[in-house]
Every structure is written in C-alpha cells, then in structure tokens.
Length: 417
Image (cartoon, one colour):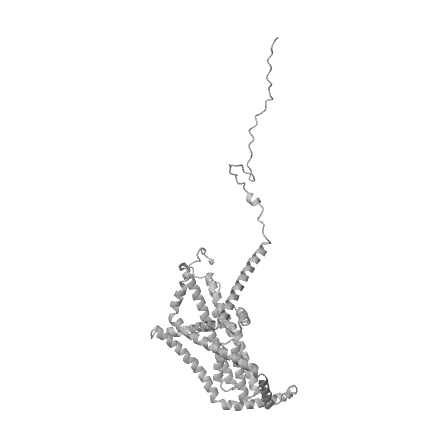
C-alpha cells in the first residue's frame, strides 16, 4: 500500500505583525518609563477651583487687612486710655523738646551741653511766666474800673433788650442776678460734683506737666543716647532704614509744632491790631490770651473770643461788643481756613481736608485730647510710612544712595517696597 506523505498546510503569507506594546500616553505612563510631557498639556488642564471672582478675593483680602488695622488701632486707644496721664506727659515733653532744642543748640555755642539745655528750659519757663504775669497784673490793675464799666454795660444791654417787644419780659440786670442766684442754688449739688471732678482733672494735669518737664530735661540732655538704646532692638542691617524713618517722623512733629507757634503768633498779632483799632481796653493782654488759646483746639479760640467780648461789653457797651464778636470770629476763621492749611498743613505734608477729618475723628474718639494730638500723630505716622516705603511724603523717590529694602532690589526709576 503506497504511503503518501501529508502535504504541509501552508498558511497564507502575510506580513509579520510587530509585537504589540502599550503606547505611553500623557495620562497613562507605563511602569518603569518616564512619560514625556506633551506641549500644551498644562494649558489644557482645568484651572484649580477657587471661590468667587478675582475681585471678590481681592476685596476679601483688603477687608481682613482693614479688620486687623482697626483692631490694632482700637487696642492702642484702649491702652492710651488706661495711661492717659503718661501719654499726655510724653506728648508735652516732645512738644517742649522741639521748641527748646533750637534754643539749647544756640546756648551750646557758649556753654556746656547740659548747662545749655537747662538754660533753654529756664528761658522758656521765664517767658511763659512773664506773659501770664503781664496778663494777670494788667487785669488786676484795672479790675475796679472794669467792674464799674461792666455794670454799666449790663445796664445798657438790658435797656437795649427790653426795647425789643419779644424780649421785654427779660427784665433788668437785677432780675438777671436774682434768677441766676436761684438757678445756682437749685443746681448746687450738680456743680459740687462737677467741681470735684474738675479738681481731680486739675491735679492730673499738674502731674502731667511736672512729668513732662522731668522727661524734657532728659530728652534734651540724653536724647541721642536714649534713641541709640532703642535702636539696638532693631536688626543691625536695618538701622539705616529706621534712622531715616525716625528722622522723618521727628521732622514732621517738629514742623507741626513750629507751624502751631507761627499760627498762634499770627492770631495774637491780628487780634491785638483789631482790638486796638476798635478801641477795646487791655488790647495787648487780650492778644496774649488769644496767642495762648490758639494752642488749645476748639476751646482756646472760643474762650479768647468770649473774654474779648466781655471786656468790650464792660468798657464800651453792647454795640462795640457785637463788633468785637464779629471781628474775632473773622480772625478765628482766618486761623482755621487760611493760616493752618497754609502753615501747619505745609509743615506736616497733609491736605487741609485730611487735617479737618483727622481733627473731627480725634475729637469724637478722644475728646479734647484726641483733637489736640490727632494731626501731629497722623503726620508722624504718614511720614514714617512713606519713608519705610522708600517714598518721600510728597510722593517723590528718595535719593538713590539710600539702602534698598532687604530682599527687594531697587529698580532705577521706581521705588523699592
């Protein structure tokens, strides 16, 4: 039997397929291999989820910063309220130092430093004492005449008022005195409590003045040494920056003090000229009162006006008193709206609108004390801030040789922050 070999089965000839290997993609890298980054993948990735629009996030950041600033300011006001006498004494000491330092430097040319500063302090005490003594002695020397003239002025005023139909029921000076005495008797208890509070305030004021004079002596004689001691708490690489900031703050504070002095002097001169022209007696002592009252915001000018009107009423009658009232109000408006913005505002580099708002806010928050210290403290804070920002208070860049802020190179034509 013939054996036939089986023919091998031949598969259709096809091209050999290469071994399949998993293709690495940007999203599924193969183990052991580094996935190649596809260009534009980062741009195609979805942005991270954020809350709200960009302006909402910016507003939130600003709001939190404002909350922090308000909290810090509230804490400062609370602490100052606890040690108000110490704060007043320190403020007065700085004012005295700014006034006496130029005089002490003048005396320093002919005598030792410590003796020069003591001489400047003694000169200031003698000058203020001489002014007060002159005013008091001038009033006392004419007290009897003023009393008689005042009674005459009241009689004339009563006759003028009773001539008006609507005011005919007010009566004369005797009726005014009787009604005034009855009113004082009815409110005697209230005034006793007020007098006790005033006595306590006067004692605190005297303590503050004595402490201020004590501190002034050391500020004048050892001010540089005290500042170097305080500067040791700042890192050494930032001494120059803080030196510049302190110098800017001190210049702003001393500028405010000089501005207030010139404004008060101008008020006194204008008031003296006006009172002399209209014929009010004691014109020169009254001009000294106006000069001293200009250093006390709100209360000082009003008190000076009231005293001047009373003297005019006592000496010349109600018509001249009305003229004096109008003239003194005009002088006060020149002080508030012309002299202070031109002189004090220029010294502290603050806009008059800012000064008005600061005084109003200070009076609301701290009363008379807040109104007195609001402008100088704001001016000092602004000067220090501008210097730390490497920008002058008027907005111009500082000199290029000033050290730049650490970690932020200063670019020419810009200010380092």
